Every structure is written in C-alpha cells, then in structure tokens.
Image (cartoon, rainbow, N blue to C red; front, side):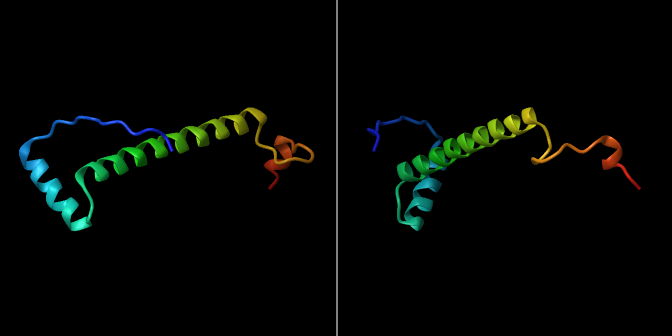
Length: 78
C-alpha cells in the first residue's frame, strides 16, 4: 500500500456543514469521502486512457478481424 499524505482543501462553511451531515449519515468521514471521490476520478481517467490506447491500436491495425480482407465491392453487395 502506498504511503498516505495529508491534503488541505478549503471549502465554504455551509458546504463543510452539509458534508459533515452526509458523512455521518454514511458512517464515514469527510476525509474518507473526499479520498474515495478522488480515487474514483483517478481510476476512471486511467481506465479511459487504457481504453483509448487500445482503440487507437486497433484502428492502426485496421478493421478486419482476421482471415482474408474483404473488398469494398463485397462489403456493398446488394
């Protein structure tokens, strides 16, 4: 597990008050809620970038799925 570090965030007092109530309802802390939200955002970004790299790799290889390539005429037979 990576070493944890503190992070200071400034919020208005009304938001902090509402966050305390929300955290209490969820049985957690504001810090844990913020950490979870940031982790979720980071994970989503990493997943997006991985999917993007994979899609670009597939595009670079072309659209065929193996076997012989089909001609344009064969694709558009009516």
